[in-house]
Image (cartoon, rainbow over all chains, first blue to last red; front, side, top):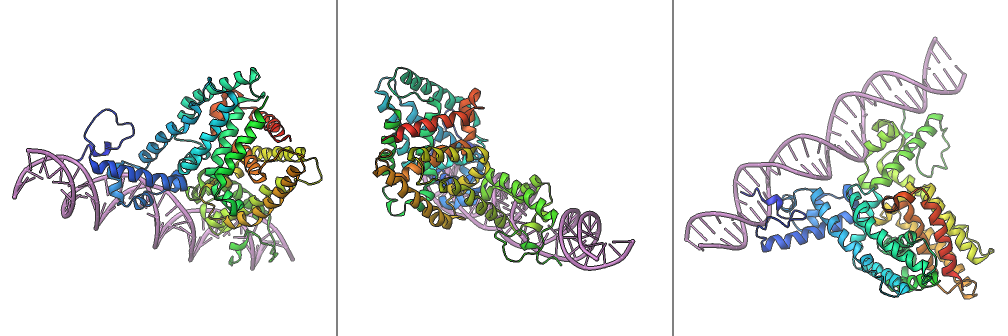
Length: 217
Length: 217
DNA sequence: GTCAAAACTGACCAATTAGTCAAATTATTT
DNA sequence: AAATAATTTGACTAATTGGTCAGTTTTGAC
């Protein structure tokens, strides 16, 4: 009967172009959104399928009809995330003005934290807990990309276009300062109170000015 | 018989100076260390008492003899943490040289991340998951302290001793960049590989130089 | 050494969890 | 309007979880 069902929403899919129904599309989106909500808040082990199903407005067996397990669901979210997460850094170009390229990267990364805070937290949860499910992505695609861009920054540094800095730790600091606004939002909210509404705006101003100042040769 | 036992290791204690035995001292330390290990890795909901008991080398009922529940154990860790976590900022003094005071704070905070990475992760887990158990600490003692030090930094800024920056976002950036080395250690390890061993040394150099450069008037 | 308090244990419980499955219901095709 | 395929559900399981408790063993003061 439905022995091919478990594969419906399988991660990569690609091959096996069985027709995807309207309902499949809708429910898959709803489920992934719900899973992101719950996983990002409680981490992998803290999240439950009941919570996710409830959040998605489905019964648990119905959820399992679309994704054949908790792990599959989580993996799907993570692999979707990695692509989105590396984009801003990939766009850093050797052709632009060095200082602008870096500051633009900071802004893009901050915007990502603002628009996709749940994704940021999902990622943070995974890393903090030792990245058991994405360690290959870290030492693979991520490292390759960072090595590449670090070399670019190093060349700018050497050419005197920006201050002499360790490019790797510069990148780390950009990750840290931008993602902080998504991951530690509760803390920021508690501290800023009245000025909470403009936090991303203010952060953009601060970080932009700070990196500009810190990187001038 | 042992009806006072559940209170043995109760958080504040203070009153009720019942004698504390040698074994109580030893086991309490062992348990808290094990709990820190597990909670910091899996978050509150992801951690299990079985894991913690196992890590501590005790049976679960024996663990519960010292701490009367999972929540008590977690709370105890968090309240111990808050004190330690605020110290470095508290030490920032209006009497010193502004730039040095701030850079020293950065170094102290980085050292904390290096020496107590598990505490940093415990804190991060709690905040990411919405800080359900320490929100009062955040909007209470933490906010008070930050407001105080932000005013100090603002005064330095106004007096032209350091660059004009938003003091709150400066503090956020310091939290972010330093704690990042504890919380995202796995990611940093994956990226740095060969240079992993000297990461804290390199980070100290980078951050010190960067904040010095970024904050000069 | 005796004995009471402290420390510890195995066996248990009720609740929650990921996951299954046969059967019922709903959509889609013809 | 059938017939078929896709979707949904309730009722279930086996494993795990936080926590209890009666009773046993160990510790330390005298």
